Image (cartoon, rainbow, N blue to C red):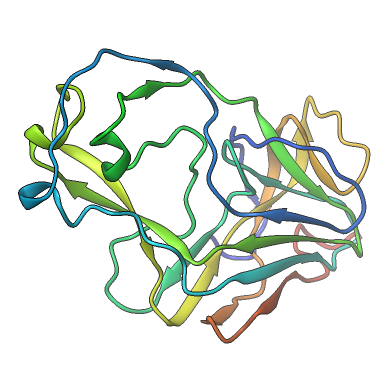
Length: 229
């Protein structure tokens, strides 16, 4: 996570959906679409067991709050506002994750791989004094190695991903906002087409207790992008 300082910053990420005012987005799965390839046979049981996807043990709502004097812009991935929850312990999974073009290890045992195009560049605008909610479903994505015989079609490698349930514990919130949006069509708080630029700022450090927390506010204080003279 970068410090709350004014630094040049430009990124190009993506999301989808339109909203205004104080809004809510549900973290979850979903395919972006694409073409399926080939066909073949997958494995069952034995060496192919243990790759089943898991459900989350709870949910967490993060409320991103802009206490600054100017609008701020948070980049997104293909599905959601782009942030990370970083566990305090030793954990290799990613929380949350972009499921827009994902087939997991379990799914690749019975389905061919899909190929997706690029996402639109989207960002989330949050106006001064406004907020935007995202809800995490309590799952993460873990990189696994699966025997080739378990894949429905012959893979280029043996890597795949498994959806896992996040363990109870403390998680730090990692997210950045920027002071500008380039080529944007934003009209208020919510997602819009464009890319972030200008200066980057991190929020006040926030640690959440999962799953007890329920709802946690993450604040960008006044003068996050520099105070007016």
